[in-house]
Image 1 (tube, rainbow, N blue to C red):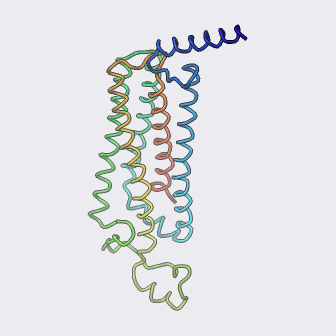
Image 2 (tube, rainbow, N blue to C red):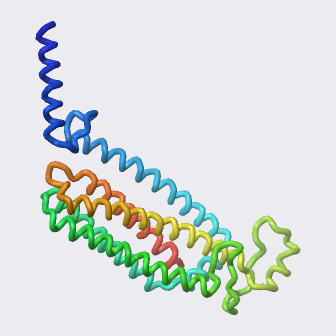
Image 3 (cartoon, one colour):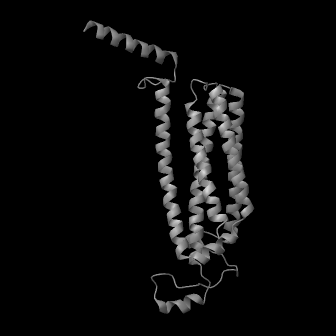
Length: 253
């Protein structure tokens, strides 16, 4: 009985000493390894909810594309493909610099951590600048979502079929005017999905800036780099989502 008490007291004292040695070691975790693994599982669960969020939008896009197949194909020609391709390259570079930042954190290299985190933030800012010019062009032309759609050009063909659920007698009248439903729907999804992705980029810039400030303070080392690793996972998912958005909107056939 007394031996058990001594063992427990010694065990508890050992943990207390370990926690005192590392200020990043939270009291409810036995070891730093356990703390790191738990944090990573939590991040993966969060990323799973992000996949579900965008997954629903992808499904909705597919359903509307099946309803307006020709309009969706024609609407995508009004997107500037080289801008989408440029943003794809920028995000791929940012993923690479993020990997290098995590590796530098694992080695405790403060200078490289700061450099690669700054480059990642720079790439994210370039992405948003390109997206700003792209959105501005759509606004000027009137390629807007839903009821805000106001394009007045002559390149919109007549409706190819009466929308499902409407009376067949309405088809001739609908065919006599330009068909805007499919185009407005396409740009509704375009602005919703790319806009939501843009908000994730903004959130990423904020978190990366916080990590950058901590890296400048020298808080990360080979024994503690969990925040850098978790932010890296988030950033890779943001990049991966764009990898799907780019062909979906800019390369649709």
